[in-house]
Image (cartoon, rainbow, N blue to C red; front, side, top):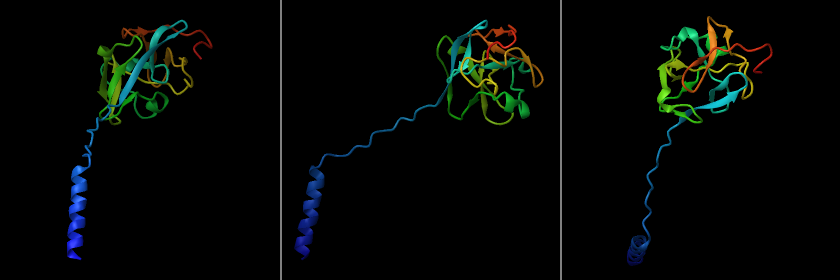
Length: 162
């Protein structure tokens, strides 16, 4: 009985030694990106948009230095959040060199473009809308940005951009 058990173990070891080795492939972690792109809008020209084509805005009180739209303001103007470990990415004619991030007082980081924190507007429910353009709301004016980082202050005609 012991001899049979011994032969069974030897046969198993011999088979295992002859079998091809299974090598675990190293996994590469994918870096999450937050994409800022561009889109041409009537009367505004080429502006920044998010990965879903939603218009991005800057807030004048941020003064190209820090996020100031928080609390109730951020409910209406959600900041473009940069998850931990994520990187901002540019597509279209947006410039990667102008992308960065700033600390959000509410926690985490917000994507910036030419130092302006970026936000969406809840009333823009479809790509290509810019209902927040030139609005004086939640403590200051909101404008779209061009791919060069220039603030576009064009005021919409009644019913435009929506």
